[in-house]
Length: 636
Image (cartoon, rainbow, N blue to C red; front, side, top):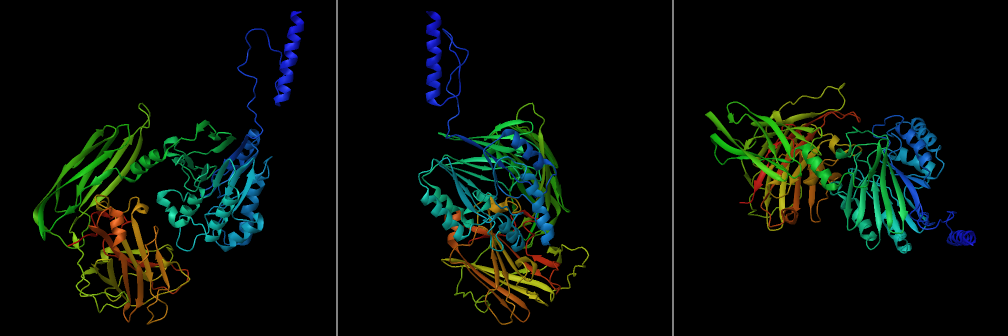
């Protein structure tokens, strides 16, 4: 009788499993069972796919090819790329076809579908885009799988001068329509090459803000690449993930730097995607490196945790000054910093060396004193006076071998310039008759640097004031900041086929951030602060219309006006910028700004020549001589 009951029980188990569509066939023993459940994790609506990261931008041969073999071992249902599969930048169609043939041979090994999207190496110019479209048809598209929407976007529709990714109005309209047509999907995945959603990539200007707005109200996940270092962040409950590499240029310094070769394995479930990172040495969860950790590493690498109080003075001559060096540690782990302070003659500085530890989430400051036996004359343009050099040691976990970061920073003795309020109306028309003064002069050859990319060509030396000179002034009224720049140039080379920075023109660099941010050297994290106007004179003498003017990211606000006009001795640039921009950045009625002016001079007629001179008022904000406080203007 007991055997009959057991047999009936087994039959019931098998019958139940069969009706449920499960695959386990097993006889249940009396009492306990050597398993936790007989409900297999194989729901028909669940699926798995793989994402591959950048292969190029400095390809390491063999890595991507091996990754294809490993994907076949994993057997996902399909594979998605986030771009940069070929090296690109080919000058000839034959070479470009060879690059595509190489990557296609690797991908052909896959036993499952592969979905392409373009990166900046895949679509460099019209030649590359034509070949890409010929091979793959579309540069952006979508597909559906198990009631899940996949949006494959193209960040490489950039107009000239936009380097951080861009979506055309046509692509944005396409995305909006796709989302409107598929509102009932259970999840949406978005793939793109450049991470335009990062604040420092200026996603709003790229058009990402419009796409992100269209995504609101649905569950979605965004993947990108391009930076070659991994970062995870969460926005309104949605994952935004920037991948590292699958063979692209990478220092492979590990998790803390987000530098590794990996595949992303995604399992779609009823509760949303489960995301893991598969590497040669193991498996990592999606939060390998958070945005907060990324920002901390960046701040260590570029020295932003080190802050210096600028050496401002109102005196014409000085022989004694004091400042401070401040180091902030926003990490929970302690850091160790050691370094030295050196001074230009005739200054003596105390201290000359420092070495101490900073506990987690604390800040420490070092007072610094400068003394001189002779009085130092302070002009409008300061050369670097002090140089700080340091090395920071930090360990991700206590007991781990520390990472080290080296850096240096300059400090110069300088004045705070005053931007005057207008006493008369200024019309931005390329004329200077309504300006009472242009008091600032680009006066010294020490601030002239060659713009030379081709060493085989001799760069023209600076020949004096008639060759390259500039002066400028600033003013404001109730609504606008005004800037006028006059350039003296003995030979204008204007070519509309060249990039804006490779022929004659004016550069206006503006930092509108609040203090103490804009008191620091501007070369660090410049995407967070800069507004740059690049103005080129017209090709025809007498014209006052702009032929080629470039606004950096983020874009200048509505109401900005720029005129660049030719003159008999060079060119004039006039600009007005809404003061609302400064007040918005400073989160209060504006108090001041930092400014630098530069004039570019190219005298070679060769079309491919990139030799020229770059004459800036203050040390170039991206250069080695940049120092804290330079180009500082205040309201009266």
